Every structure is written in C-alpha cells, then in structure tokens.
Length: 142
Image (cartoon, rainbow, N blue to C red):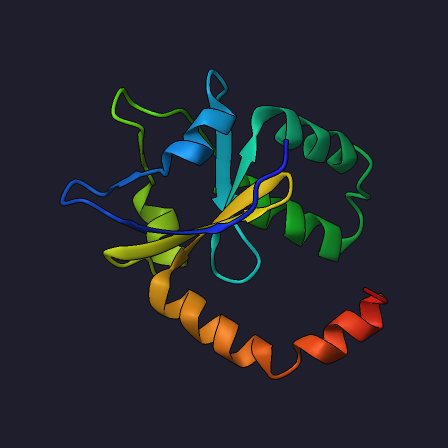
C-alpha cells in the first residue's frame, strides 16, 4: 500500500478529522494504529505495516536505554482506530496535545504510512526544509 500526497483537513468541534476519500479508500476495511511521530506529528499505520514494525521491535535490547526509550515513546501513545460511518477518526487528546494540533491539519502520505500535522507546524517544517532539500537529496543519492 502506497500513501502519497498532501491533504488539508479540519478538526471539527468534537475533535474529529474527516479523512480524504482517496486515503479512506486505501484503508477500507482495515483498522489502523496512530501514535506519536518523530517530528511532533502523528503517525498512522495500516495494521499490516504496524505488525511489521512490532515484529522488528521484538528484537530490541531491553538493556539498551535508547532502545527502551524509543519503544516507550512509540507504544505508550499507540491507539488502534477505524473510521466512523462518515469517514472520521477521533484522535486522543494526548496525541493532539503532543502534535500541537489546531483546527487546520495536514495529512501527508509517507509510503506505507501517513502523518498528521498541525498545518502551521507543517508549513514551518516545509519552509525550513526547502533550504536544505538539494543537499539532502544528494546525500541520499536520489
């Protein structure tokens, strides 16, 4: 499953986000997991991708503080969700607070997962990143 694109969405008065139809269709019939993302965004994984990630985490060294810290960061906020009849999800308050979500949000495709960003944080991130994107592409040999 390949997610791509950038979609502007809004959070309604009850804290729900209506997902774009194209992304909902790709997830149709599947539950998914949302959790903290690395850049103060929210990561959304289809269940099959989440299970792949969990399989990798089975091999972490519990004696390594960095690995334990990452697992705690990821799993303590993880929540299994699905869409309601109107194609909405209700993001837990703890994740809204972590990612500083406001009324306007951006959902972006990230290959096998999606990210949900505060629109203002996304705009700032993109503005800052554009200055270095050529160097990053060169480092990645893309």
